[in-house]
Image 1 (cartoon, each protein chain N blue to C red):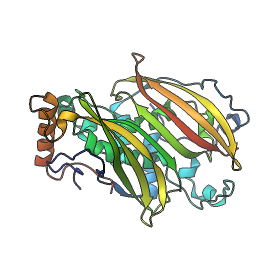
Image 2: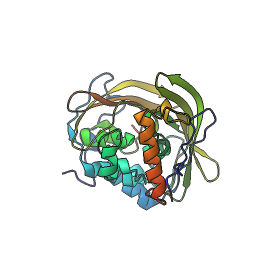
Image 3: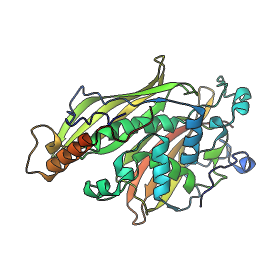
Image 4: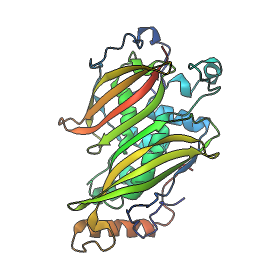
Length: 184
Length: 155
């Protein structure tokens, strides 16, 4: 694994830019670990026996399901993996959960910049974001918003400390080679 | 310390049903000391080993000036800040969607408070929804993040 998008070349936040996806095989162990870390111990996520018999209106899941906010968090991770090293900020995310994620599913996130606007020293962007299973089923869809220092982009102001700091951070990450990042 | 497990059935009879949830009334919450362990446990659970959450040297040289929490730290904070009798914990509560605005990062050592309420209740397509409205503050009263979520109530 490596820092997605951080190969030493700053990604260009522009319309059409696609965030490098996060892909994760969801297991019961991962769901349990997420329950412990999120302190959300709803039996939806932990009790297979109950889930085999529980009715949810017209829906029956048949097994435990992953937390919707785990998927939401993976999408957020996809965004911060790119935006933080650029000296930017992840500002907002909105997602609807459209299908359950079951143990054994592989979830793959996607994000694409749809709009950009220069606002003073910042470049604010809007992005569409999604998460799908390996068979293409959409499990979450929505949009996100954030910004990066305009100076961090190619052609940015070399005198701006954000540009210098960002390039230094990128160079350090590149020098680390296969650095931290896990999950998939 | 916080327990690492919780029996969601134990207090279920005391939790408000959809009919009983009072729209607009603030839920009972408690301050949470945001520790490095809470931050790093959560980051690891989503496979996010960003050095801003783990590497003090790296984080101190970043524009944040020190370690921070991932944006979605509001997930454990929401559960740690609410009572075991809170209706959010009713077994079978389904998350239909969420939106969050992030104003500033949580940091280890922050004492975080939550103001939360049901903003709306909706009966739609044979499902009972509640709209959650949440705002987290740091100890100085500054907003960390705000969020709204829709859950499907099991009863």
